[in-house]
Length: 255
Length: 329
Ligand SMILES: Cc1cc2nc3c(=O)[nH]c(=O)nc-3n(C[C@H](O)[C@H](O)[C@H](O)COP(=O)(O)OP(=O)(O)OC[C@H]3O[C@@H](n4cnc5c(N)ncnc54)[C@H](O)[C@@H]3O)c2cc1C
Ligand SMILES: Nc1ncnc2c1ncn2[C@@H]1O[C@H](COP(=O)(O)O)[C@@H](O)[C@H]1O
Image (cartoon, rainbow over all chains, first blue to last red; front, top):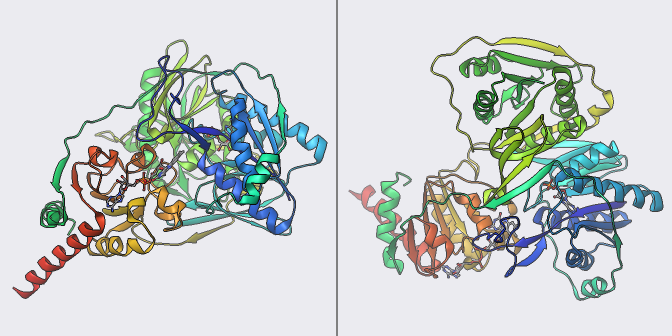
């Protein structure tokens, strides 16, 4: 199986997401970065499939040159080839522009090395959450796509994919090549091993430049949602609080 | 170009709980644009669909028909909406931003080559589109503008409350027959599996949740016991699922489940923003944490500043004591 996984570098904020003075970006001054969680699971899933069925996992990201960090991390957990499509404008491209950059790269990668059997995306990116980049890519390539996937099984003809719904799941069976949008929980991503860390240092990253047409969607401002400030009632500082807690549960009628 | 076309989501004819929300949001946008709302059902118009439209005073609805539409399929439904868009010269195509709603609009907008903006909480047009949408699962908002006339928009789930009208009025149903590309049947739902009936984490009235502070998988035994006494469900933070202490099905948050219980009991959870967005719809929150400065504590209505390993067993003992008393008297 030849698998491509598209991942996005995102900041990892704590209790609040602060914005820069010009309101156009998340203030990442004191933040670390990570791979968007759904996509981290997509990389793990791809690594597991390839371990079982052979093949390779290419990971592609569109972002600033620092996104190399996320590609190297993917190398440490089983990915085998790496593509960084640079966007050094300091602001994310809109969903169509991002999709265009990915479509163009896929065309070149496939012309060079053959078709990808599976292209995995996250269900949505952690930060912008546009819910569409993967689907736009799939439509442009004329390949089937299903989102919300929490289980993938590779068969002789194609793949069986499970999509999470409340209280159960739907089953899809797709011919290859196919595109899937994966959700966190499909697996538990591994931690890098010693060998993985070495692989990550050696990983060769192929850098690509691309020109994208102007986007339709322009960001004007990032801002906080309205917060209701609440006065916390402290019921106690030891297990002696138990009677007060149970009084509260009785009051709320949940006992 | 005219008309606000709203997709009314259903599964094999059964309306999604978000269907009323979608019609309410569409009515508001239609008032603002001064263009009619047209409700869209992909498949047959059921009596349930028609009455919902009537309750919302929607004068016109369309039923999109094709013998190939025997179940849900993202590509087939997306293509149907894209064709409806060009056929009717719709101004706006919208839906509620559920997993399916967003998927249908992403498919349809890509096929129609029109921009799609997901999870909006407000949409206005004055020469250009001005939208406010959710990022980070609602932890941050983004104002965007688009210099286009037509647009595909989803409204964030639960951002609009369904408001049927006081008096219902008749809805006229028009059927539109399509001749969709058979190739798109490749992604129809093949089968369904039910794992649990009844209460789930997202519908539970009580959720007892644990974070890294619980310390181990075994540490959850007392939380299980408390949830059992309260007929509730156990939840957890991502630190817990990452450690393999609980299954991801229990995770509350941006990439887990969004809950809305009567009370959320958060034990040893710091309250990171991605956890908070999943829990903030709770009616009451009780935080049990050793750190009085923890975000979960400062955002909770009630808190106990102590070791959860002492407090949780004490709550269980107190409930059992009171139950014992009430059965013996
Ligand atoms: C894109 C993205 C998406 C994410 N999605 C989610 C999500 O869906 N859900 C989620 O939960 N997280 C999510 N996270 C992770 C999130 O940022 C936090 O890392 C995580 O929620 C922390 O879990 P925690 O509160 O259990 O652990 P910690 O932050 O380590 O907090 C542990 C808390 O336990 C308290 N404590 C320790 N010992 C005790 C004791 N004995 N008794 C009482 N209290 C004690 C400590 O004071 C502390 O407050 C996401 C992160 C990113 C970047
Ligand atoms: N900048 C990017 N680079 C690579 N993949 C991306 C990028 N942005 C989005 N994606 C992929 O597209 C999916 C959907 O993104 P979105 O439409 O932003 O919700 C993500 O989960 C990623 O897999």
